[in-house]
Image (tube, rainbow, N blue to C red; front, side):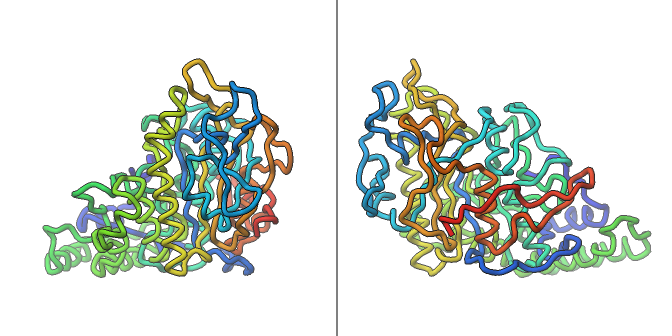
Length: 448
């Protein structure tokens, strides 16, 4: 899915029409700024986002002493780290607890899916707590957008896009797309590359990053020649970006001819055993794609494990978690961690696993759990994160933070700090001209 507010300049649009592809990352510059301040161990971020919101009580924050209407049917189990327990749904994760940090006291105040997704990914509340919202030019950007923006500001030159979402965007029911995940007030040039396809499909082929099979190199050069003839006498566009258009065109041509960007998305280059290890399903192949992308230089990859709000277990919570949702999720997650470590990439790749909120402590009449932003858990690993620990705690029924409350903004400050950026010392410009710091949160120092 492309941004709902993209408007391409004429020459760029003509090039896209002629070539069938365009990828402008790597040459855009934001005004001012410098490279990361240093001190951060992370180079890239992989965000595993469970759209719909998983139950923290049934996964990462078991409450075996809680009343029957609260406690999970899934028993707590020991992990590799003494004193830390998760539920029996996560046996493979439990054996890697020394690499993980659980933050059990995350909270905010929006209980709608899109409102919650905005708060958790942008680090600030949306103006209304609603599902019935969509992106606009004035949106404040999410941390994925900002990491991509910072990378381009600092001269990003990787073959793959700096910010990618796979397989589909954050949304509720695919009709209401979460604000913040596009360029917003930074501009459409900072939109993510959204796969908008199932990477496990037999005919999967990434769009817009290589020449169309019907267009060989000779025909492509002929069309570029035609483009030059059409535009050589055309008046220059009177916009701040007009001086960069020739550079954009050169970069687009280089990317199309080299095919390096398309190679990063080509899962057929992976051995079948590796693909099976991640799981031959959309989530597994999205996680594998995330690993390939960070290897190619991508700075932020979101794997939205929905589609839409698949984890919204208002009914039959226990059976859905046990039989449908958790097995492929744990398989993909563990494969990703192990693969990153084996390739020497875990220390430089921050992996975050979360949803937009948690689920209600009390089980409802449909054997489900409802929306609950009052307290939930997120998991971090890699990127310099100190594993084998729990930060914060919830109360006796998992309803509210008991110790060390953590906001989404604090999570974002941790991410930017891990990447070597000053989260409050760097700012971008909102649509009304106000300078906005990357986040208003404070880094979780226990993690770093």
